[in-house]
Image 1: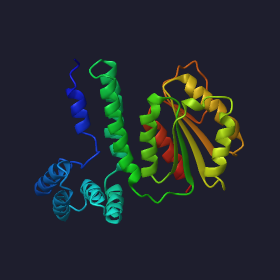
Image 2: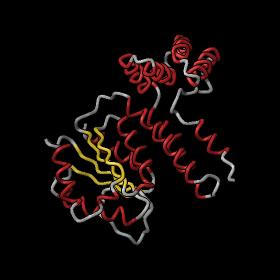
Image 3: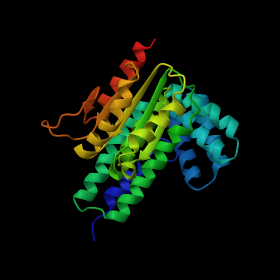
Image 4: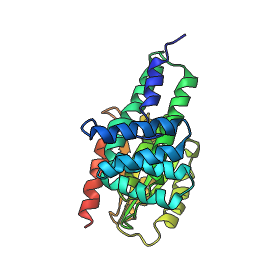
Length: 279
């Protein structure tokens, strides 16, 4: 049977539970945080919270500590206090950096493990589910969204769901109003352009600011279909609707879009530039 040690190590690194502190943190704060993590994993959320609070007394500027306090409070049912700490965690710990530098590379790593035969389909699905739960943590953080920053995120196929979830979590962390449609492969038909037009009319009624449409796909066919369906609506928006496509595509394929890249970082940087131009 394939050795699944890699998948166990991968799961251990996900921020589904408490986060470790940066290496340069105060030793006493790290000791309390480590104790809190151990108790959290045992289900002793009240004791875990005490340790996280002790760590916070020593280094209150560390976002990871506030994140750990938040998820402990949430487990204890104090959702109001949890929300406050989630907000502080978002301010002090760069959520986008964590998504781009930890979670997103892990998606590719899991896919490589499966492709190389080191894990099977069951383990791959387990890992993908764990990643999805990790990303959902960022969506739980209450962010004051900018009404001028609107984005629709689409996965053109099942294999692009996690990437689209990563992008959605990043957009949410950065104050965008996010409409994540998930896997839309079942909507690939001649009526999608009409369905999409109705959706835009509901989520972007007064057309404030800009509306980005970001599509992720593992195939050029998926990108081409959704781009061709969305571009007619885009032309009517007087340049306030932008289209970005993310996926591997041959140089011979020509698709009309504002940005085409195979890197999620390029998509997010481009989006940030557009939002800065709105100010």
